[in-house]
Amino acid sequence: MELRQNAKVVPFSANIHPTAIIDPAAVIGANVEIGPYSIIGAEVEIGDNTTIGPHVVIQGPTKIGKNNRIYAGANLGSDPQDLKYKGEKSYLFIGDNNIIREYASITRGTAGGGGETRIGNNNLIMTYAHIDHDCQVGNNCILVNGSALAGHVVLEDRVIIGGLSGVHQFSRIGMMTMVGACTKVTKDVPPFLLVDGHPAKVVGINIVGLRRNGITPEVRSEIKRAYKVLYRTNLNVSQAVEQMEQELHGYPEIDHFIRFIRNAERGILR
Image 1 (tube, rainbow, N blue to C red):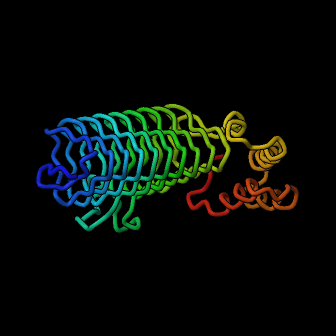
Image 2 (image 1 turned 30 degrees about the vertical axis):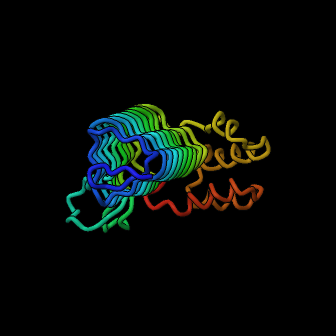
């Protein structure tokens, strides 16, 4: 059995408020809830069991996965905030099990960034957080209230961005890094670190985060050794990488740490 809502055929099980406006080109999954006065545009696909609060605006092309919770006033899939954008078709992809809180905003990609903004799974994007065009956000990340990612930013898995912090365009932040509140990040940040300040500086290792994410004591010890080589000697980056490769055990986390530094196009925070 089906229900016709604003000329769009949706599953009968969907709980859609009568004031919501849904474009006929939108695809709505099973058990989706859409609150009062929300607007779902053309070329939007919403996965099963997703809940959308009141006054949410979702524009396409946007694909949203399953079991997401999107709160009041969020704005997803709008045009990128980039003067180079000339109306070309671009996309926003959001995975599963994300929580997107009130008035958060995420824009689509641009041709210059591959045309896609991507959000992974199990992320918490808090109130008024902003993710701009062509960003690539991994899994299990947290963007605290009022934080912002400029265009082309990459967050690896399990990154935490503190409240009111800003990340410069084209910057990359490595996995399990924690960025303190009101921090200004302008360069790449290697994995597993604590970053704070305006401008940002590396202030230590994210030991609490490593423990919470099940990193063993042996690997944590090697990460500490890598940190000391990179940040507590007079070696330049190339020399530090060479020493780490010679002296440290080849755990996957250490290999990733070294590879991240080698591939840092903007330079790394020191």
